[in-house]
Amino acid sequence: MSRYNIRVAVSFGMMFLLLLMVGLGQSWSLCLSIVNLCLISAIMAMGVNIQWGYAGLFNVGIMGFTALGGLSAVLISKESIKEAVNAGGLKMLLAILIFSLAIALGLYIHRKFKSKGLVVVVLLAGYFITRYFYLDASQSIEAINPAFSGYLGGLELPVILSWIVGGFLAAGAAWLIGKISLGLRTDYLAIATLGISEIIIAIIKNEDWLSRGVKNVTGIPRPVPYEIDLQQADWFNELVSKFYAGSLDLLPVSEQAIALRDYLSDASIVFVKLCYSGLFLAVLLLIIILASLALNSPWGRMVRAIRDNEVAASAMGKNVTQRHLQIFVIGSAIAGVSGAMLATYNGQFTPGSYIPLRYTFLIWVMVIVGGSGNNLGSVVGGFLIWFLWIEAEPVGFWLADLSTSFLEKDNYLRQHLLNNAQYIRLIFMGAVLLVVMRFSPDGILPETNKKL
Image (cartoon, rainbow, N blue to C red):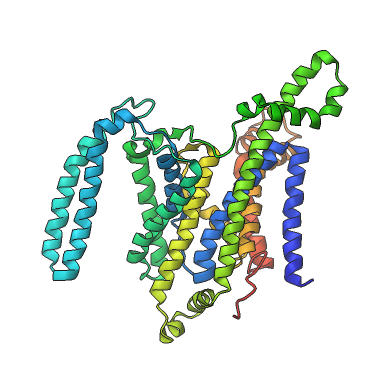
């Protein structure tokens, strides 16, 4: 077995043991929750790895593309609010069409006649006409029962379809952004993508007619059964009864029904999370397979050649900007898919929760720690960093309590450390990053084909 294969086996083996310890020491429900979020984080890291590891594109706007994926879960799966649609749906559609037509006409005039003045006139006219219909439509929509709805709702289609739509929505936004910003230098590209990401979040937060803004959308439909339905299903009752038959037989007959109800409750939660794990794992494996095939193809070798030496690749006739645009769109699409998956798993869309620390910084740490340019490295980084992020809080409380156990319970220092113990996760992230960068600068699983 090669040294790389040993690293892979040890890395995944360690993660399995850590998750097993959580399941045995805390609960299997918590363990599966961590696994599911690790799988989603790994998919996010894959998107960034494709951009940075394959092509060297420094995108710090991951948060915006993830939010677009979450928005798609609302627009696709939620039921439409008929009163809101009747009040302003047609006018909002007309406003969007006029805005799109104005942009398209402006681009056509610019290419055909090269007249900047006429382009400005067309865009200004389109803006004011759009604004006229938009303001009336948005106010009418948001006035419909704002405490419970106040937005248009969605198309009431299967929620899994939103994962695909989220990818396309993020890809479309990435194409527009890429056409503008990919000609910039690396540091300017980072600033541009961060700024555009914040603009996307600001729009989602403030356009209540679209997704209720910061009032959030809850009750996003599931692609898996609900716990209450499982508990009432005969086949599930029989399955749980057989599984816990040994434990139930030890109890008095009068207590068996109560114990079985508790077992059913716990088992239904675990079963639902296992269903999510199967779906998320299938998506992750599909992305890994497609990404590996692309990386090892002539296209992948060309992309890595551009990453390593743009000047030489350009001199050989390669369209550097076009390849960068392709990579930027693909990576952003994967981030959109993961955003839709996260909103589906949480069952809600909360624009206020999209912050750079969670959806940009942590994802970059996953890619760097795991090993940029390595698909399995992104998976390892996603699992490790998210696991530490979740488990650092209880560990922090334990350390704070242990280190101050000799003090009185009402001691100021003890209370201060206990009240702020959750922030030790930031120290953990920094420590892990420093240790990996010191002893394995290329990550836990470095890129294996740098010389190709």
